[in-house]
Length: 90
Image (cartoon, rainbow, N blue to C red; front, side, top):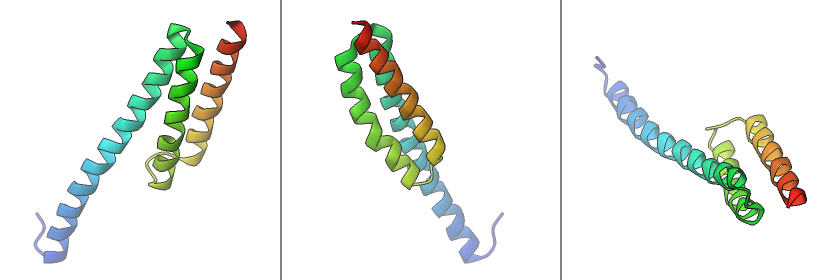
């Protein structure tokens, strides 16, 4: 157990940051699931709208060091390609 005041404060800070980061990660996953659901449903318009909403969430996650820049770019690229293919199919 921590004995120094600074160590105790670090424990409290880490707990707060963990809550915030968990909430942000969950929010990103929720937005990604909305896009996945729209794609699975075959609704290109809804998928495009959900994709527009997920982009800033992913970039915010990159800025906050929750997800890597490459992971966010890969996700957006793959989702974009799937939405484009869905729109062309319809």
